[in-house]
Image 1 (spheres, rainbow, N blue to C red):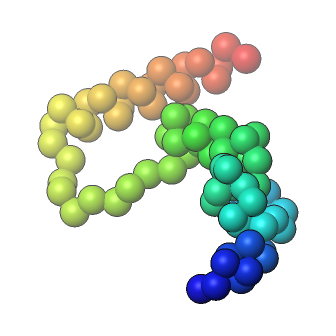
Image 2: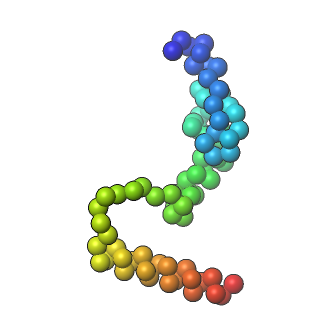
Length: 78
């Protein structure tokens, strides 16, 4: 790809869908730091996951059940 095409490579932000010049953004594939941080927050809050073929063990299931119970109990306080 020529330098001229690189500089004019327009894409949509993977978070907000706003169009921007890919090589002009220091936050690519995001258009801004805000979009980058919103995406990072999704990872931290468990909004995204990576599939695995490895089955859950008993300890994993217990951790998930405990977190779910705590979340449901917390929603009852609102």
